[in-house]
Length: 432
Figure (tube, rainbow, N blue to C red):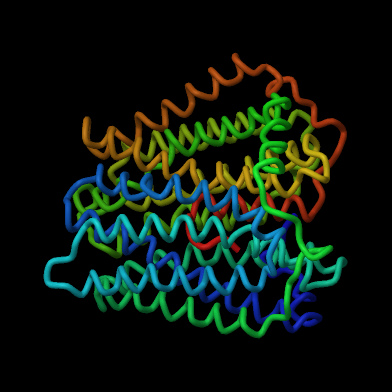
């Protein structure tokens, strides 16, 4: 079972990891500030939940391209160089948001361009950051290092959105964006002090051949494919964040502060859920457990869509976040069993594309549904569609129901990585 106060040995043993961890902590909180500010500003300028949903969707293609190519880039270049370039580029994108927010009449198209650029750059940044970790700590400290990063990410998802709502209300959007820019500055400074992080053997050439090999394996493994599809089902139909600004203003009668709480609630649930995943190693039928968790996610979101009381809604969102984290642990176990070692990196990049791309498709679906039937309709109908989708998937891919776990328990490191991926999926901030 993961501990809230994780083993801090990597912080004591590795100065480079200590620096990277500190920079990531600051930058992750800043990214969450921008996530909330973007959604709030888009709704404030357009008064349209569809536009908020479209804002998330517009970054899908850049994010997928960045994630898929980022893995090959991280295996070809010095990873320190990749991280340096991505920090600078992501800071420039947020500077564009700050300048636009300071105008008398901010342009909506600037929000879309900067959000799309940030999504693509995050896709490039994540594989290099993930691959750098084992190069900075000893083998015996890798699991503890993953735990520290996971806990930091979860905390940033709670602190960042809640703080973002307060700062938007008191300081304004432009200042909030500039705060995020300063956090990228901290992260960049930390990266510059790292040693060179050249891949083993000097790196491998980038190309389509290695990427397509991973796709072929994914297609051949029906159980593995099912875990990807069931996660997409949950995020496309059951991720209601595109209507959070509308719900905060029109249903709960609040403002930026309430928007921040709504964004923070799933992260809080994910953080609490990550503390109670030790029992998952005893579950044999892991495919059924994945399906049950997604049903809990969809059902909880559906109830959230019909409850007009803020504190109850926040609890429901937290329960959904906890269910997603537990689902991620089981999905990671399936991936660990179904993917050979030489394909783990490429399939991890593909999985990140699903993890980060699903919520963006969900933004579009929620925005369209809200434009048709209103924000509450978008939430409860999406939650129900998610539950129905689980039934359809179990019917079409019976391997998911029949999975017995293969007799292989999930390692502590893989469990922590699963929690990290789930938290990243819920937060859509800078992945750690």
